[in-house]
Amino acid sequence: MLDWKHEELFSFLEMVPLPIYIFQDNSFKYVNQRMVELAGYTREELLQINVWELIDPADRHLLLQRALRRLRGQREPGNYEFKAINRRNEIRYLHGYFSLISFDSRPAILGQLLDVTREKRLLNELQKTEARLRDIFDNVNDVIYLHDLKGRFLALNQAVIRATNFLPEELEGKEISTFLHPDVKHLVDEYLRQVIEKGEIRGLMRGLTKDGEEIFWEYQSVLFKGRQPYIRGIARDVTEQVKMRRELKEYLCRLEEQNKKLSKLNEELARAKEALETMVRTDPLTGLGNRLAFQEALEREVNRTKRYLTPFSLLIIDVTNFKKINDTLGHPAGDKALVRIAKLLRASCRQCDLLFRIGGDEFAVLLPCTGGEKARMVADRLRQKITGETIMETEVAIPVYLSIGVATLDSRQESLGIEGLIKLADARMYEEKSRQKAEIS
Image (cartoon, helix red, strand yellow):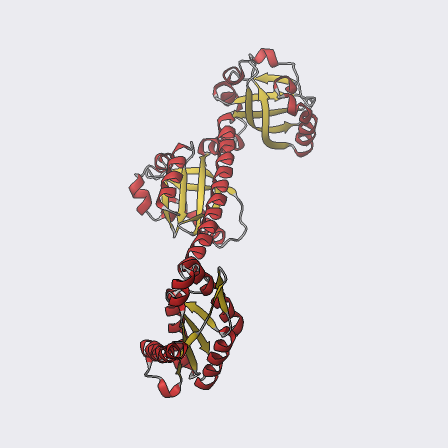
């Protein structure tokens, strides 16, 4: 990615209300401020630290293997929990969300973290002993509820007031659906069936406060059997987390769209670069290769001839009477003559032959795997093809004549080189041009 893209990405990630990092080459390439706060290290320290020292040893090997497989493009879970160690050597339980992205044109991992340490420890405490139920019921900040097997509340703690503005007594004796969102009221029967059959379930429930505001609960319900069985549970307000997850999902969608736009831009740039390179090497009048393309192709062919000991010939072609065409019929007619000559040359050469316009009225033809005798035959064929062609403008017709110089490179002339080959073909072309001018005049 370009530097300004880095800045745009990093600026956006700083606004995300979650600890976020980019991981590549076993190190952090970027951490946002929330990540700095979570780890307890400075941003500079996190960019230098060994990432795996921050992971609890019990989880370190598994996370390393998952990271390597993800970077190789293998399928891995998109999110899971693990234990980490902050600067104060405290164990933190984290729920991570991981995506494979392209960073600096190489695979990297975008990680987003939720600190679920408090939730994890609370659930562990609840599982350790039921004897602390009363104390938790009286003091915990989460909502604790009891309801019968038909879904009617038997009791709730005071935390329900802070979360929903309902008083416990307002809900006691009422059905669970009283404070559920209308879109999920139909799920109550399925919830009751599962908790009765399984004895314990966990999940996410969508509700409404007394004021009609949307709220999300992460709950755990347990069935207690006896003469009068009932269900006891604890619910935590995770509205902010759900909103953050929604925002994160929207952010990832936007990031994916940006990646698509960037890929499209890269494709357009590649096409533009290819078109520009073609334009730089193409004569705009005739469509043949220009002087630059000629020099590059000639160097390739000479090197190939010397490497594989195959013959190679060069034709330098000049329009003998081009000045007369220009002076008599005008420059537009001269341009038409050059275009016509280029088409005739192309039609008269083999598919493997390479044609170029290397000057005003000068052309060049590269003849791979062609010795001197065959090259001279090609030159004769080209002269015959052009002879008789006339350029007409305002009823004035001028025939076209070509002067062609032939130079051949083979195993006997390896020392000739590129410049020597051009000079030899040029000299022979000028000899023929002088002879033709004398004949024409």
